[in-house]
Each structure stands twice: as structure tokens, then as C-alpha cells.
Image 1 (cartoon, rainbow, N blue to C red):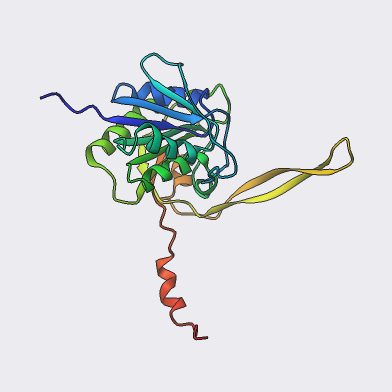
Image 2 (cartoon, one colour):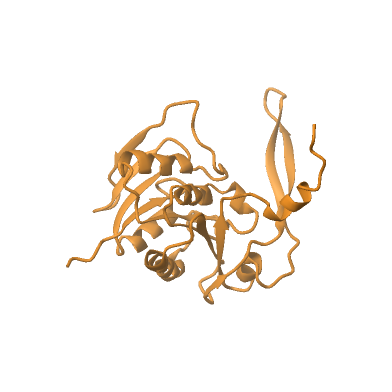
Length: 257
């Protein structure tokens, strides 16, 4: 009997020509049938945004031999929605992989990340999903040392699946000497944000968002700790944002009107 060849949806937020998605394609094309749907331009920081105020374009492109590829005019989440509804036509892929992102999506960055939001959308569609990111923002980033870990995780997820409503947020540290994969929790950290105020030629104010990353977490089981100590962090993420521990507190309130 012929072995089932898994179908793999590849997405990202850095755009279809980004080196990171090329590296991801190079890994997963040896595992199954690959379909790529990626934004036609960079979409970093878009979070879980969707396009509702203008039409979406989805155009087939020829970039890598034997790989079915489409560029989308929308967000990373739009890419997943269009893939499921128009390319796979309701027949879900076996796995959705997003990235490899140029820059970390550890800790609170998962909230803002287009890379991770694409993976979240895959999980919402009940597709086992993983988001991959590397601590290197440059266009010349070297992804070679990440590939064996990407392959291992993809194969493990295809073999074992993931709990319903759970996806994986995987971040690789800078440098080529990765000690291994470490299962972690999301660190308690945030950005202390500032806005660099400037004046345009028409004497109007405009602003560039800047900031400093603040880690309040001293634990040795967080993703930030793992990355700082040379490990690739693997955080199981859920999209149910209910604070279950707070329900008992709210139930003590007098809410009678």
C-alpha cells in the first residue's frame, strides 16, 4: 500500500520572496506535497488582522520547481483563509507551517506577530500548526542551522498531532550553535514603547514606533530564558483567551441590575 503523502500549507508574514520562507520550503518539500500562500509584500506586526474593506487578490506564481505557490494581496491570516476555502476547497491540509520569520516572536511578541497569527488561524481551522521564528531581522539571515529542528518538529506533529485548539510557537536563538529544543512557557515580558516624533516637509508631526523589551520573568522555564541560554524555545499556544482563574472572582461581584 502506498504511504500517505501529507499536504503542507506554508505561509509567512515577511512576504513570498523572503529568505525565511524559502528555507522553510526547502525543509518541508522533502516531507510532503507543499502548497505556499504568502503575502505579496511584508506584513510584519499585523497580528490577526483580516481584510474586509477591499477585495483580495490571489495569483499563482512560479518560483520553485515542483512547488504550488500563490501570492496574496492581504494579511497572513487572509492567506490561510483563502488557502482553506479556495485552494484546498475545504479539504484541510495535514499541517500548516508559518515562517521562518526574520526576528523573534517569543513572549508577548506572539500577540502582534503576523507569523504566529497565520499559525493560529490554521489551528482555528483544526489544522495542526507551527510558527517558526529566528533571532535575526536581516535579509541575509542564515537559516541552515534551524532546518534539522524544523524537520524534527514537523515530523513529530504529523505523527502525534496536537491537542485541539493548541499550536506551537518555535523560536531559534541567534548563532549557529543551538543546544536543542526546549519546551517552555511564555515569558512575562512586554515592550516599553516610545514614539520618535518628527516633522514632515509640510510641518506636520509624524511618529515612528520604537521601544525597549522588558523581561520581568526570572524563571528558567520561559522562552526568553531558553533563547538567552542557546536553546530553541517551543511554547504550546492556545487561542482561547478566557482567564478561567478569574471567573470565580467575577462570580463574587454583585452584577444584579
